[in-house]
Image 1 (cartoon, rainbow, N blue to C red):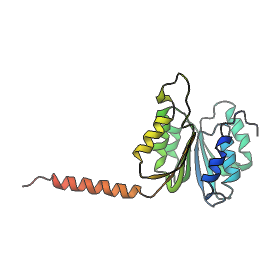
Image 2: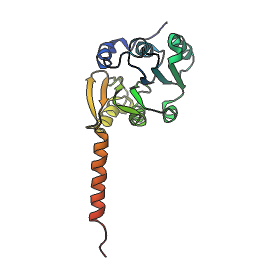
Image 3: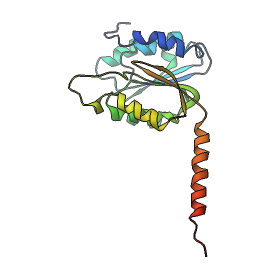
Image 4: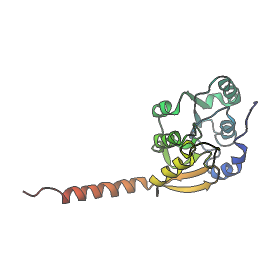
Length: 202
């Protein structure tokens, strides 16, 4: 494997801790949005998705020679990798869940980060992890809407109570809890009560 970039290795300590309960488990289904050359893909396949029954779904446009580099990188695990070549907004609605991991490292513009999170949250299992990459990434001259942080903060705000924070730093790692159904019941109970209160009296 010949990688030309290493934007991943600094995340290994937090990943080792976050994935401790997943390592070697059967029937895991992971989804990686933005795989590039496959460095993080290979780490997951080598260290976590070691069961023959576990699968990694990868979404990326893989433009030009990057495609061949990715194919070469994951070739030892080719039977465990499902590639979805294209833009995430086109691919994600076509990929059925559920997943034990959603790793969001695609296009870094805020709208796209938020879109990837919204399209995959309901496909993430209770107890599953969602990872946002480059949370603290900034680039001189770029408007704040063109970097991930505001999108991640906004998404976490609207799913408040539905997750536990596992790690926050350059990446954000959250674990989905089972309170979503509880919040939905509260909402529909409230709507029902309001509807009853406003019913016309004849």
